Length: 87
Image 1: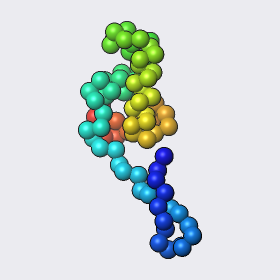
Image 2: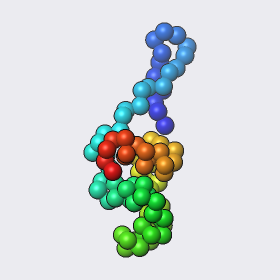
Image 3: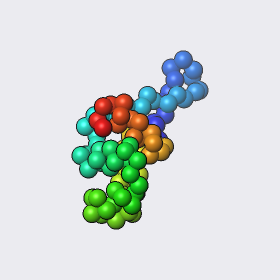
């Protein structure tokens, strides 16, 4: 959740502090691999098999990526990675 700061223009109002843009080095290689596989249309089940982990682990890692990037959905995380030319 973004931090609230005082808005100097209004004595009794608060404004959201600007969100820090996600850094390119925020995501680990395995997180980018998962986003890449999702972008290719792979299912969570297929990704789990390929990475030799459980489906729950894949879902947990995807959720961690969305939290790290400050986005609300998996597709937003994938779009972010594509726009950053990481996948």
